[in-house]
Length: 415
Image 1 (spheres, rainbow, N blue to C red):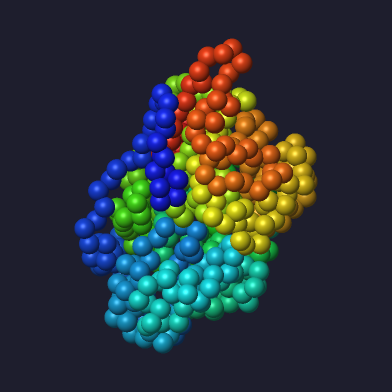
Image 2: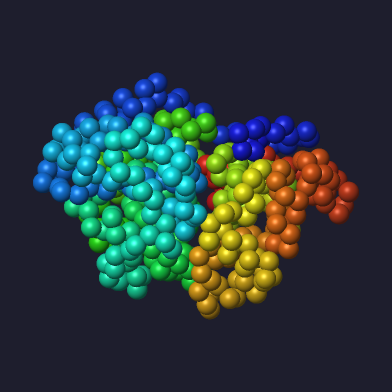
């Protein structure tokens, strides 16, 4: 089982769902160069860059693994081939409503590119925003000014399962990563994410994904480099070209890799969370929501989901993470579910709301780090204690499923 960068042994009989083990590329930067040289269905980035006076490259923040240092040098070379100098290019670390990273953290995220081009962070609460109007569904579009005013925007992203967007990647690095607080709060409001079609592993007919793409169309986002990673963060596949096209291509190639099916339910499901998602409760609870909010959950009603995560940052350091914990502390699951549909819950409210959905049906616990008190989330010293806590009332041993990497292994019951 993953718990950050460590592995936990499950000391009792269990069914196990290991993560997929694709073979990573021997030369990640070379794989990126080859993808950039032949983008399907669109011009090369060097052609798109001709005449652009200002270029912004949106990249992920530290809340997810991303091979950004391998991706940026070939992208910068393409831009220079199109006549865009490093002085005209800005790398923007999209933080959304996560905390504003330090200068050293930004440099660590982008690697050697930090010495060649300007690198900044876009944080939804503190970064100057541009007002780009309102979407057809009523979402206010506020995007970091440096991105909104660029003549060409390039997105770097990781494609993996996502609870609302279906899959991450595509336009998300710009539409959420570089968005202002108004945009993020609106798109993540419980009333919106509760709409039919907003679900894990779904792109087509997903209102959340459609809204992100409409937001992105208000900007000059024309090109994306998206990757699929293995469980250790190694680059497995890369695609470059139009943001929606590369996302859909990687989903088509990898969707079955992420999905597992089971024909039974369990008393206890143990969910491993690899780094960096294990650092905060805000991120680590994704594993519980992927399991508990599936169409046919693998855990029985009233059963126990145990997430393995170190929680070095507690609930999390950013404004969204802090508000998430406050909401869970101040409201019971039923009250929070009702409030979310009637009233905006603010930054991080969507994660509190989906965790409340899990808590309304299942028990939720942590092994590793201790969750903040008063959130309705149990803490177990080890997996043996969790095993004993999950024992059914009839005295039998609990039936257990272990999901080694519950962030990229989506478990569903058979239809």
